[in-house]
Image 1 (cartoon, rainbow, N blue to C red):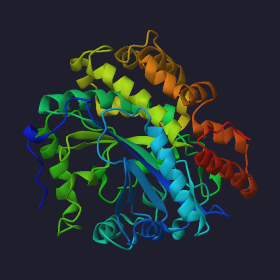
Image 2: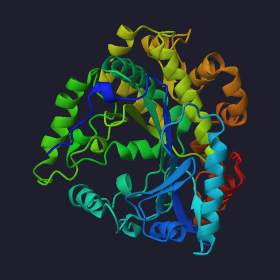
Image 3: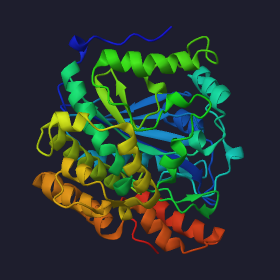
Length: 418
């Protein structure tokens, strides 16, 4: 049985009036920096029980499928992300204080650099039937399930028409998100040659039921009725032979790069890698929101132009940014025009420099200036990690670089290489 979704009349927020931020972090051994599956003990230390959710004022904690992962999120939607980085920072400090008693600490970035799939452990407490279903169908020991950390950005809509406008805008923005947010150049101790390995792996994590993730770029669908009939119902039907009880028949099983959450009136963007500190995550979120808002408002291109883009054409651009990050060469003059760029070709980093300079409000730019300047000037976190590691890093070098990243998270500073 599928989960019913509310009618549009129940969506409480208007277009881009409410925002939700979720950031996932790894828990690692304080000494070795290898993954450490103690998220349940962390939750018990904080609440007295093996809770799946903890409210800590304006920020909440949640468990995730892997036992070595914790998610921090805004405790409900917020009207603005101004000052939110400080709230996440305070919770990171609190969690690290609790983890210190377990010989553990938080590590940032989107993939653990030397974790082996055999180290994966599933959360064994509440909601475990969901995780067991995922593991049975998809075999979650692979990196696509066990070793991915993202910053997820939720943007609201208040009507079916607003959903269509927002979905068209976000689809157009998705291909260049890795050029700003890639942070995953290393897997199993080796440089992959791909700037955003998390997204590259994410595209394959649902291979046993491929329509669950589709082509990551979602189909050009702009009403709830069409979305439910053409995407969600097909996902549920494809899953049904392996999920006869319908445990996974919910909107969140959809693994596209952005997914409609009709249950709460928002679209969730899933293509942003976790950065070195919340200050960087929130700065990237501000840049993405500025771009999406400009598209929704028709400042860069018309709604009709945005809605006309095929999955294949957008996926071709994303392929290059996943591989090359900010260095990806975008030659699609039509795409650049749709984003308001004056040239016919450019590097993805140049495009983001133009967008940040022209779209981010002055007050927001002031708050997020340092993280964005580092990213635009020195490259994505993935590029900075790669430069610091050198061509063939050994384990000692990997540990030194990622120890610095752990310190960046604890201290709220940008990673500048060592």
